Every structure is written in structure tokens, then in C-alpha cells.
Image (cartoon, rainbow, N blue to C red; front, top):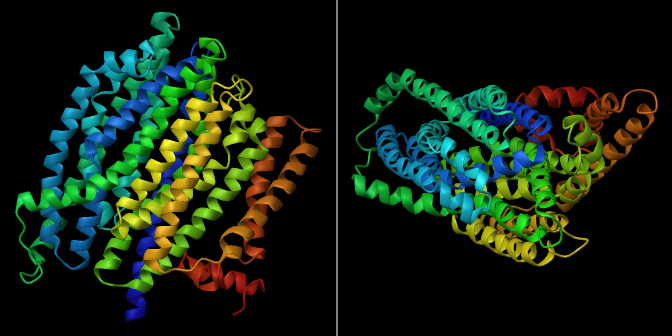
Length: 545
């Protein structure tokens, strides 16, 4: 009975991760479509990306300020309540948080709308970004409210609310972006400022569609939620007043939010310092173009692997919180170790792949604006540190340590800011200075958090398993796939050769992971459909029965 119960919890945790991972893959792949479209569209390109992304990064920062980490706080607090059977207390937390976010989200939207002129001209020094900020301002309120519903259902181990709504939002955003930009381009003769504003207005339209979906998702399940509330036993329910609940929410949400806010500030540091620094050694036009490459193309490609691993951080907060509430330390150890191992096995090959195939990938994805392969190569290994920091932070927050991720990231951001200011204006360094500083920033963010996680959990990590074997598998993948690419492009078009080589890379890497036996037998069984996978590997004589 106990074994079946554990298996059910294991499947719930890993299934939740898989749902989020699949939705994030959809989000990023579909999002890549409109990024490719914008970058390759005549009249938009790297200059349009600079205007569009600078405005969008400010929106992302204000969105974080508006939500103040409350969705993650809800996820943690509600999961603790539901794990003990207190559904009544969990729902009260949700209702209070929703009202709170509505007020804060409204303030955030007004700040973005009314402060657009100051932000564009003084903070960003990109006057063209003013209209993009105005067009996207309503999204702050809508996303803030939707995030509360997502946090509530994440805590209930129902990741479909988050996964489906985010996927829908991205699909709508891609469709609306293309439509809006084409309409604006037609009536304004390719005015890049207005096209960028149209692209951000498309974000607002997509957010409206996503909010309608998630609100409907909640309404359909309201009866089930009320039934659970009625079944809450009186000896389990602990009455808390509104003031006490708000205090608990802020106590958890502010440190959690600071991590996200500082991450957004980290992106805005590039928006603020890169163009300023580059203008000291080149023209303003070239400076904007190089920043557009970094923010529009390179960051887009680097963000793809991050979307695969954000699922771990999202699921670990409620998962570890519930395990800690019930003092299930075995579950904590299993979830932390498996999540970090999977993060390494995703991040490492992506870093190697983008470094080795930088030029072919840019030519494949951005055929009309493929410049910037050296920038992509110089920043590729940021993926490893970013993905690991993401999972480590989720683990720490789930275990109740909210301060360490903030401190670690602050240290990294301070180093990044100093390095950007000092080395970007150096002739011969330029934009590469931003890629170097970003990698150093995320390394410190990961390493400091990792040391604290080891101290809290007492979990031991095998260096050979977590570092040596994944690196070896990635090298094997890179050598074989690039050799195939080199030979194929002599016979067929380079773009087709690239696609075939990348598919071969995935197959070779998967086989290398299996042959090197990076996963233990228990870890394989902990994966979705793990028993069937293990049985197959036993039949292939790779693992013993």
C-alpha cells in the first residue's frame, strides 16, 4: 500500500514536470516562429528587435514587480495545506491572493502606461520604445491575475492550467504578431517604430485570450473545489485572518520575487549598458544592430533550453514544500537529485550544440539576418549555468530558503554590471564583453545556491555522474554530428544538412547517455513510463534484471 502510494506521488510529480516541459517546448518553438518572422522581415530586422525587446524587457520587469512572487507563494502555501487535507484553508489563501494581485496588477499597468515616455527616453535611451510600452501595458494586470490561478492549480498538482494557458498564449501571440505587423507595415510603409508597437500590442491580445481560457479552467473545476472544502475536517482546518494570510504571502513572495526581479534587471542591464558601451567604440547604428543580434536572435536561441528546465523549478516548489510538510526526506532527496541530473543532461548538450553549430543554426533559423555566430558561440555555455541555477533556486525555495537565491543572483548581477561597464567599451572586445559577463554572473548564481542546497539536504552528488559523463556524452555527440554535417553539406544544401545533423545529434546523445549508464536503475524507474524503459534496457543487456 505504502509503495503504491509513493509510486502515485512519484508519477504525479514527474507527470507534472512532463506536462510543463512539453508546454514550454511548444511555447518556445512557436515563439521562435514569430521571432524568425520579425528578424527576417524586411524593414524590421535587428533594429526592430532592439526597439521591440527593450520595451518588452521593461514590461517583464514591471510584471514581476506587480506579481511580487505571489504565484509561487500561493503554490507553496496551498501545497502545504492540501498535503495535510486543509482544502478550506488553501482556498482562502487563493481568494485573498487573487484580490491582492488585482490591485497590484492595476498599479503595474498604470505605471507602464503613464511612465512610458520617461522609461523610453531616459532609462532606455530608445525613444522609439515609448509606443511599445503603451501598447503592452494592459498585459501586466491580466497576467498577474492569471498567475494566481496558475499557482493555485500547480499546488494541487494540476499543471494543465499553467501548461495549456501558456501554450495558448504563445500560439495566439505568434498569430497576432504576424497579423499586426503586416497590417501596420502595409499602412505605414514599413515604419519600424510602429511595427514594433504592433508586435507588443499583439502580446496584449494574446494575454486576453489566455486569461479567458484559464478563468474558464477555474470555473469548470469550481464545484469540485467546493466539494473538497466541505470535506475538510474541523480538526485539520486552522482559521487565519486576512491580515495573517497576507503577511504569510508577502513573507514568502518577496524573497522569491526578488530572485525573478533581479533576473529581469539582469536582462535590462544589457538593454541599458550594451548600447551605451558600444557607442564609445562604434556608431550608434552599429551599436543598436549588435544589441539587436544579442537580444533578438542569440537570447532567443539561448532561452530554448531554459524552457525545458523551467518545469523543474516550477514543480519543485510545491513538490518539495509538500514533502517537507510531511517530513518525507526520502522524497526530497530523490526529487532534488533527479531534477538536477535531468537539468545537466538537458543543458550540457544544448550548450555544446549551439557552440559547434552556431553558424549553421543561425543560417537555418534566420536566413535573411544570420549575422552573429561568434556572439552565439561565446555565450553558449551560459545555458549550463542558467538551467542549473533555475533548478537549484526552485529546490531552495521549495525547502523554505528564499534568501540564498536572491543573494547569489545579486552578487552575479553586480559582477555582470561592473564587467559590462568596464570591458564592453574596450576595442576588440565590444559585444563579447556582454556574453562573458553574463556567463560569470550565472556561474556565481548557480554555485552559491548549489553549495547551500548541499548543506540543507545533505545530498551527495557524484562528480563522475553529474559532470564527467554528461560532458563526455556531449563531446561524442558534437564530434559525430558535426562530421556528418561536414560530409552532407558537400552533397546536399547546407540547411538540410544542418537539420539532419541536429537530428543525428539527438539520437547519438541519447545513445551515449544510455551506454554510459548515467542513470541508475532506480532513477530510470522514477521517470514517466520508467518501468517499461527499464525493462527494455534490461532486454538489451544494458542494465541487469
